[in-house]
Length: 419
Image (cartoon, rainbow, N blue to C red):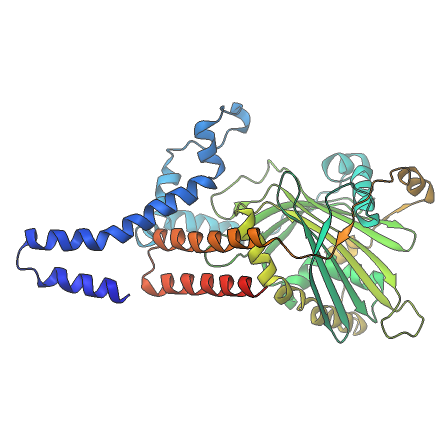
């Protein structure tokens, strides 16, 4: 900051334009260096449209929007110039938000399975729960607790695709049915704000026979990322006394893609909800465990995404417990059950023969309680600092925003060194 002010002062002191030119060159030198660094980092993790410039063209039906479209170049303009151009689009978006909810369309069980999820997805989730999926070892990354909740989390890096996460949340004095309805109740997520990232939801289709739902979500991301849009399908099976809920992203041609929010295609977030023994040692299964398996491609470099998730994970998770207690109180008070919670109560029962057919697979993956390698820590610190430089160079919101970005990056790097 002091360097910039002193350089500007020297430029203003020059009596002629020729005398000011060398000072301006010195002032622009660090800025150009930052721009070049941002270009290098941006090319290293180039988006899909940039990768298409050097890769073989995709078929016309699945091609991305052309590189030199009006929308692309408009997105490159500063915000103060882009706002007047985008006002018409904003009006159209507002009209879409104000429209009445579409009628929910029922479908047959066969059509629902073809559209959304089937027994193959259930088998995959069962193998994950039993540790027989044959994937890489899990690395323990978190162990926290509250008076009526315990939480553990693991992570592993797949050979291809984004990092995968597994977590175990145990809630005291809760039944699997209460927790099942709680996680399936989109209306309560928004009204109670225990999941404050969910800003919009709409049920597109549902099946009264299987309980399968096709849902449209929009989730809010931090200020330096655009919001993300999800088209997900979910279905719940009952296997013994446990509930297996599969939720995954699916294609949807009826909702066109937009620049903002950005569509997330690769999304998987599935749970196993079951009764477990209480930590209080009373010998009763009065607690409920939620085993979650989650991964998604948010369009963010994986190393930066891992660091952000690690820093913000507990802050999000600890809001679940008070949200569940508020949900229990609302149900005890006789408040009406929402439509999405009613759909979560429609489950497909699976017999023991299905489990016996899966037990032939004996491949397992172990849970390793180890920390990440120091080399990866150094890479993560470099990525955060380099990404902050690139982000600061692309924003036009003044020095205060840039200072905030670098402050957040330094905080993450400092916390990473302490681990």
